[in-house]
Amino acid sequence: MSELLTADRIEEIAALGSESPDPAALVAELVGAVDEGRVADPDDTGYALLVAVDILEQAGDLADALTLATRAVAEQPDDNAYARAVRGGLLLRLGRSDEGLTELTALRPLLETDPKSMYVVDELVESGHAELALEWLTGALDAILERTRTQQHASEDAQDEAAAMIYGLAQQRHDLREEAGLPHDEYDNLADRLRAASTHALDALDDGPATLLFWPKAEFDALLVRWPVLAESHPPTWDEHRTTVERAFVETSARGGADLGLVNGTVDGLAAFAERTGSDPTSEETLDEYADSLDEAGVTAWPPGRNDTCWCGSGAKYKKCCLPRSRG
Image (cartoon, rainbow, N blue to C red; front, side, top):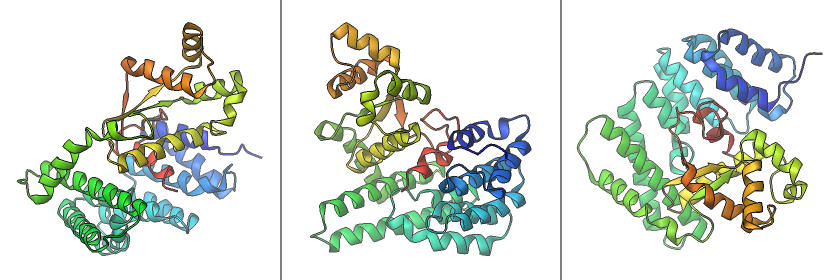
């Protein structure tokens, strides 16, 4: 029997993408594993297909990409909004405008409820429908602001979620309007005020620093081997570790945090720091102080652009890597 397709291998293929000397072979490997039931974690089946979709899309093979996107939708019936958005964008780029807009319009309400649903707008923009994207962003802002005015006694969680939605929608709308050369309007001014205010917000946060400590895959594996006790305070796998970091960033951003970033830890670096300071390398205090000591060595800003390389080091695009995989 052929080898199982692991999450690590899917990430490796996503990083190679169309830059591979043989992208068709990568697509065949992904699709073959799905067809033969060789995906190590069945929950990764839809993701494997979407990576294949991205490779085909980059190669200009939109028809085959659409076929696989349709399969991805079917493979994850309980959580297929992202796959449906990809499918809608492909339909638009293939000239099947009515079908594509129907697919994306069905997802439009997510812009009012899900802070991570900007992929709906991304597909519109990438398909040449920036004007419609601006209309949807404006409508979502109108709806959420009206909701906050009429629901005066909403829970703190609901208020935090609304604030995150308003911030994200306003910034996305502002950036699109700026790219289009449109003059500032009331919502653009709101976006500027929110962005300016958020630069000072982290000082008031009680739940963590602006910079988080992240362990690249090889270092994470080595960390738990060298200090097994850290398995009690760290996720069991690197995939869960980066997902935890992504979610921490999302939650901090929702509370008004800006200028967020991460520093990469190394086992040798932590050991040297602990020896130099005479501290326990497995204590939370030491880990925090070690992270602080790395700030000047280089901080990776979060979030990257949706089409930029993911912050986790996989080499895949952010929108195909940690962004969609942290939605749950």
